[in-house]
Length: 484
Image (cartoon, rainbow, N blue to C red; front, side, top):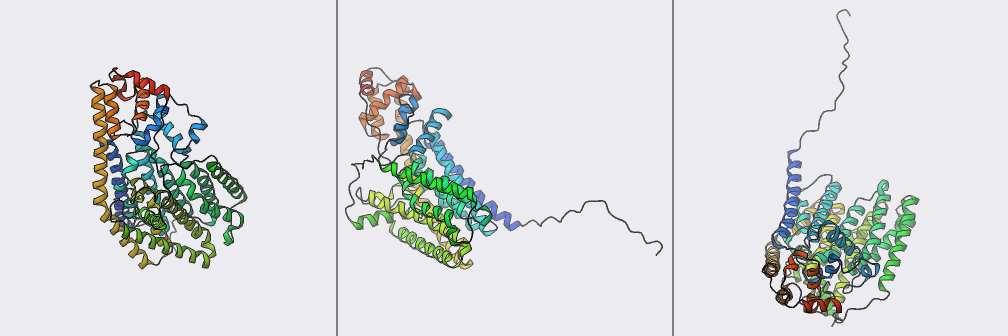
């Protein structure tokens, strides 16, 4: 075979690149673009409407910011309304003392929590499906919606927002639990159940279902035929014990706030609970809460039934299905707690804007449950239903948020103008009591502290009645107790 030559190429073999999928790129751009715009809108809201001025519950942080209150275990553990908000207080101290002595810092932090939570849920949806779908745009619409205005106005709502954020952390961890990463999910859940009761009453209410899942999976694998390694199991038992101890300590010396009347009736409890659930789908806080509330109950019931069916018929999926069910039941515990504790206040107490952040995890969980276990047709119908409701709620919740922001801005600017003009303390106190905190005695006490620290222009106040403020500092005054 003369003339036949065999040539061996020395060039490396390179696998052919996967073809560019224009549709997949477009879908990802739409979903992540929605997330980015929604996240920027939160920061823009704080930048536009908020001033470096405490508002309502945030006045409780003034003594710490000015140095009149040391950060002690007693102060961290003290009740604020019915909440023991150890973790939020620590974060607030870090932000206000060591990052920036600016009461807008916690508001930007709250905005960041919502943005991170939304990003986690988009990533989880993409992993479950194997790709991002246009339907996933409803996740940022649900989590980062204009109805979240309260957490961008009041820094201490971080106590409620952290509980909701930990719900998203749990969804992200348990929603992708598999044999090879079950140890990681157990560790995340273990740490979370320790931190939740340190976030206040809302976090404490979430703990029981999560503890049951954690202990059951650590000890016996929930009958799935697999369980995490012994280090993760030991860590889970230690954390579960610590969480139970914190919950018990929470109740020792607990004093029920006198401002919360007993529930007037079972109907009132159910009404308040339904109002709370409606906020996840319809966060405008309007009178049109009955239909969204009923829809939320129906969706949650179907999701719970589906998770129970999967757990009963597919042992390998049992840890994930029961884990998601535990998160859903933790939201049910929060709902029941709000129904019992708030139904005696007003007929619309369940529609408080600060509750929106705690109601939205249920909507996200329903969507992801459908994405994981429902047929394709059911997934599409569920996505369209949720997207339509959330979109219809945007105009009303946007108008409410803007009105809230403008009112907050106007109140703060009146105080700032009085400070720049060097008006007397009595005038400044009147302005604060008219819109930023109605407890005049508490205002007098806190203003004296702000003045002594020359915080945000308070040192420029007139001196005509400084003796009144000094007397208030010496005698002491109660802090704000309106976080509910």
